[in-house]
Length: 146
Image (cartoon, rainbow, N blue to C red; front, top):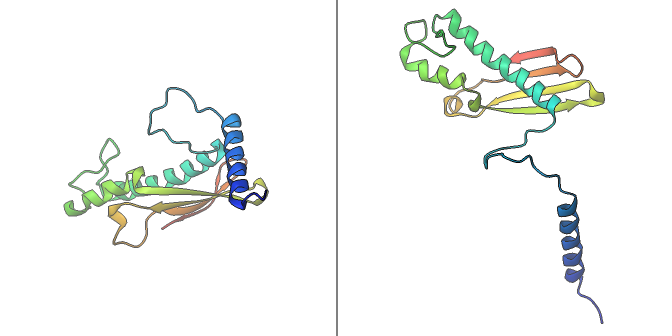
């Protein structure tokens, strides 16, 4: 009796699924349904350093214009026109960005790209930044704000 090739494929795939279930790492208990795994800690730290730089740059711009509120948000009455305040609020929100972390060879560090992904950047060029973060000290070796 000759076995059809697709049965062999089916048996192989089900075997792989069974092995995956047997060695699957258990997720931490008590997490909500929206919990996400971010990845290894050093990559998260590198990404957070880049994100902080982008947000700090926006805060400095607002402070120079007299539009940075005491709580770190945006206030009217400064040099930013009132019709642009919502744009700046959006630019201060970390949810407005995606963070990409690319390991550099040999454990040297990471290339971090902060990419704008919100309505406030839909019709604009720029926003975000690119950084090179040292793999040992987590110092910023190269910084470019877009």
